[in-house]
Amino acid sequence: MPSAEIITIGTEILLGEIVDTNSAYLARRLRDLNVDVFRTATVGDNTQRIAGIIRETLARTQIIITTGGLGPTVDDPTREAIAVAFGVETEFRPDLWDQIVERMSQYGRVPSENQKRQAFIPKGAIPVRNAVGTAPAFIVEIDDKCVISLPGVPREMEYLAENDVFPYLKRRYNLSGLIKARVLHTAGMGEGLIDEQIGDLELLANPTVGLAAHYGKVDIRITAKADTDAIADELIAGVEQTIRRKLGRVIYGADNETLEDVVLAALAKKDWKLVILEINTGGELTRQLSAAGSESFVSGKIVSGLAEGQSLSSLLADEMKTYQANVAIGLVARAVTGKSEVDLVLITPDHQRTETRGYGGHPKNVPSWGANSALELLRATLT
Image: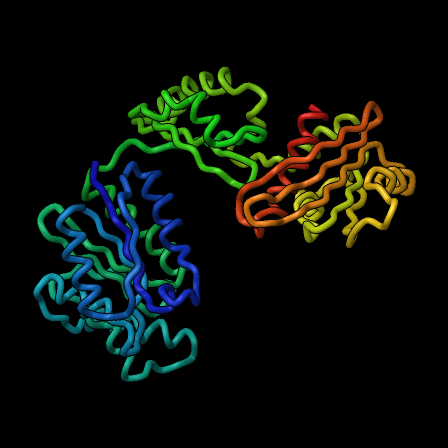
């Protein structure tokens, strides 16, 4: 199985002016092709630095995919940099220039002289026609390795990857099989405790198991390499069954299921209506449930604070009467470095529950963590 690395090129990425989404897209799709992606990197628009990282990366991997730096301006140096990395000159390709002229004519324009830069590629490179833009891509091969240079514009990059690059990789490396992932979502148990329960599974070679924490939730990723979907599913299923047996109700869903969806589905099943009151959270819980969308969620109110002698429980009771709701949840967040807390009050037709939860993370994460804590309390009560 070949290995790959992805290099995004652009000073604007290093300056934080734009977010690199190309690496994530390419990594996911290469995973689907059963190609291991070992690293991603970003380098600015500097010919020598790009050439250097290309040479460095070629020493350890078979496939390099670059994105960006193929435009018509002086600060688009990818073509020249890769030529330098391979010790060759760039050469003008009349066929690529014809393609550029043709593309520009579709916009009713004549290409400027500086756009001729885009018709130059490293000598001996394989050109890749760009049917959705003016920047041709190219591939440079050396022994069993290759460097594939794609435009940085995401839609152009994706089109060329799907229609030219991935078919090329399948042919050149006789790619077969796939890498498939399934993600189990948990809430109510910290990453460290989950690791204690399933740490032995995290040592497996295939499937592999990994954890990722998110503000009161933890994802468990199971990734399998196999020749077919069916075999991958079988490998994943065995590990998933073990994880579910060990963690039980801590797991609330898988893949695209969200905690909000689970809560709203439980409310709909009971035909109950929910109201929310939030203090010092910026309305995060209301926002999350509104985005999920459901007739079961009828009201979310942001309150600046409690008046003297006023309780969150009494305010919730008033809201329940106003909206004829069956369930109400309120949360009051106190964000302080190192000792943040959230007070939670839950009222259902059967009982009222009040608790305070502590949080040691960054204060700015408290709204998201508090909202997820409230959702987990709702899930635990309703399901």
